[in-house]
Every structure is written in C-alpha cells, then in structure tokens.
Length: 104
Image (cartoon, rainbow, N blue to C red; front, side, top):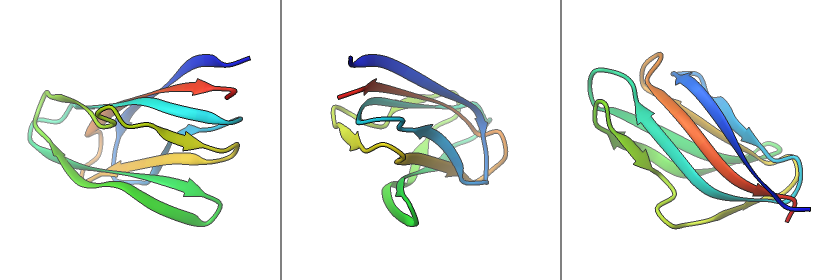
C-alpha cells in the first residue's frame, strides 16, 4: 500500500550526502532546503542510480535564513535503490526535507 513519508537531513555540508534512498517505487513530491548559514549558499542535488549520477540542480543559490521548495511543482520517480544526493559549498549549510509517496 502506498504511504507518505519524509526524510530529514540536518547540517548538509561539502560532502555528497544521501538525502533519500527509495526502498520501493517512489514519487518525490517535495524537496525543501533551508539555508542555516549566515550568507547565500549554492546547493547541488542529484539523482543516483548505481554508478550513474544525473544532476537535478546545480549551484542553486539560496539566501541566508531562506527556505526554498526545490521541486516547484515537479515530480521525480525513483525506482527501488535510487538515491537523491546533495552537497553545498560549506559545512553545516543546509537542512533538507524530502517528502515522498512510497509504494507506487
């Protein structure tokens, strides 16, 4: 049965970090990034399937203290094992929330 879920990642930094891994067929319905750093920062978000990495956002800039909905009405379909990964320019730059519908 399909279920809504969310995955939170705190203090995203320079290392490429897995922000969501699909356990089954999944539709990403939201991806919010909150800049918790004191100045504007870029964020990169990619889709990873095995060794293949596809960029979704590259160097998307978010102002200090701002939260951006990165999906902006779009949807991404993930297969079991697919990952969303993200990074930014400095340590402890963003908090991320991924909202999904799993089991579709």
